[in-house]
Amino acid sequence: MSTATSGEEPTMRDALRRDLTAALKARDRVAIDALRSALGALDNAEAVPVDHAAIRGGEPSSEHIAGAASGVGSTESRRRELTEAQVRSIVRQQVDERQEAATEYDRLGRTDHAERLRAEADVLDRHLS
Image (cartoon, rainbow, N blue to C red; front, top):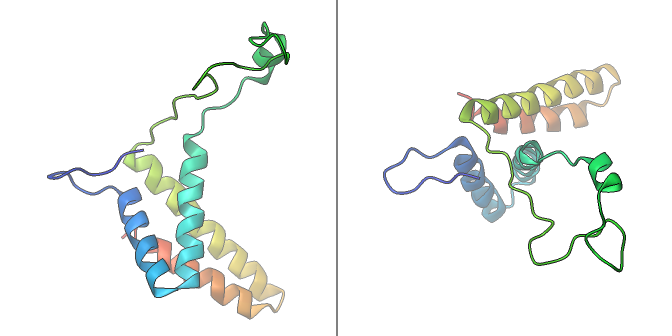
């Protein structure tokens, strides 16, 4: 999770967070939904995969519950750090998914949903320019 410090160029994630704060203040539901979704996708991409086989086959670390971890922070795992290019790719994917879904909604005659998705895509697309 990187944030710009004084003198550094703000990251795309910083810009998304800044715009989310502004959207919350303005009560802009379209922007709020798009930005929260994109930030959630970034958070998910940083998650480290869990090796369930190792958990099931490993020695229990708690005498009370098999497979349980004990101690403060024992279940914490360092998150992956995304490059700016990876962040950009994920945001691009979010835009593309919305545009594809909007096309499908148009085909089904649900233009209200299609317009909403296109508006969300536009909010995110501004960060890619």
